[in-house]
Image 1 (cartoon, rainbow, N blue to C red):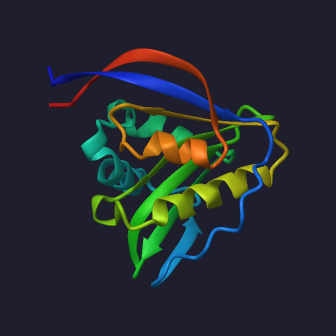
Image 2: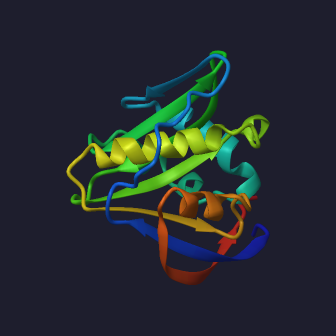
Amino acid sequence: MGKKHKTIVTHLEMTAPPRLPPAPHPPGKYALMRAENPPVHFYRYLYDAVGRDYVWVNRKRLSDEVLASIVQHPDVEIYVLYCNGAPAGYFELDFRSLPRAELSFLGLIPEQVGSGIGSFMLREAITMAWSREINRLIVQTCTLDHPRALPMYQRMGFSPYAQEEAELEELD
């Protein structure tokens, strides 16, 4: 049994596209690319690199087959932000429940935290989500995530609509 962590999960929503100025491109050599039908091992690398410090464990518990059925689904879009040719972060948009969409994951690898590219990625994710026929975009964050996550979501136009307590158990 791994260490258990109590957390508060905040569910947020956006019911109309926000009026945000275009996201300034981050300085340096960055490229945002969709990972179409990503290999499970690559997705697991991204998920672990981004979520290791924040107790992201739910997808780690899934078998390769179940995980592939999610990340390779035609209505799930995964975008990877590269910096100088190496992954810097990623986000995942889930359109399987249209007209509602979900920003399932968004995060940076530890070396990129604090660089300012998180808000760039979030703006891009929001823009891509609202380019589809949706009427609601949801996301959730918890108190185990980076402390700037919730304020950033709210600055970008998300509003909390529910909270719940949860317990996450680390993998051994």
